[in-house]
Amino acid sequence: AQTVTQSQPEMSVQEAETVTLSCTYDTSESDYYLFWYKQPPSRQMILVIRQEAYKQQNATENRFSVNFQKAAKSFSLKISDSQLGDAAMYFCAYRSDEKETSGSRLTFGEGTQLTVNP
Amino acid sequence: SQTIHQWPATLVQPVGSPLSLECTVEGTSNPNLYWYRQAAGRGLQLLFYSVGIGQISSEVPQNLSASRPQDRQFILSSKKLLLSDSGFYLCAWSRRGFTDTQYFGPGTRLTVL
Image 1 (tube, chains in turn purple, blue):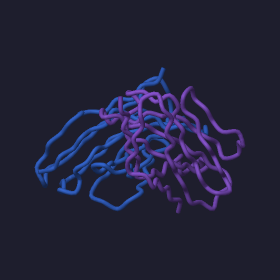
Image 2 (cartoon, rainbow over the protein chains, first blue to last red):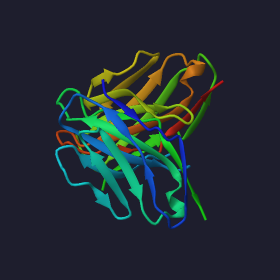
Image 3 (spheres, rainbow over the protein chains, first blue to last red):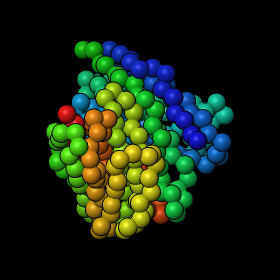
Image 4 (spheres, rainbow over the protein chains, first blue to last red):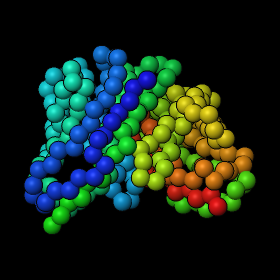
């Protein structure tokens, strides 16, 4: 079974600075997908960014980018120019290649609580 | 555009009472549907998923059950709630047949007393 580990329960960053959140995973599969979700105090899960394992290029989405190291099974999230609205719990998630009868199940890490200081 | 609804938003129930949480998706057809539970300050645990009407797969043994009576409706139920059933329940959907992202509903906060 796949596991996802986020070793930083809490992180803090100054507004306008850059912060990197760590995520490692364990899998024997070669094809899979990785995601970062954000959960603000409202508790709704919001997709931040996704990465396909077959792509060597790191995904970027505005101020958010990832450092995907497939051999090391590492998938970190970098937030540039941090804003107060970035404060939230961030979850790393893994998904196997979708199979017809099993759906596209997500395995989540335990999350990293990000605080943005003004 | 697609939207996902959950209700109720908040629920307080006594131990031993029944439960019914509902999730509906609009703007898409034949989605994959998922129920997750999140304990306080923790990650999400997949409870059930469905790839079609009447097709339910359970991920963990528990006193909860799920049903999918219609294409875009997913229901989480229990005949008798336990204290350990307290938590935040999230429904999600993804496009079937596509290696695509899961999109989450606003969630239901359940407290069992």
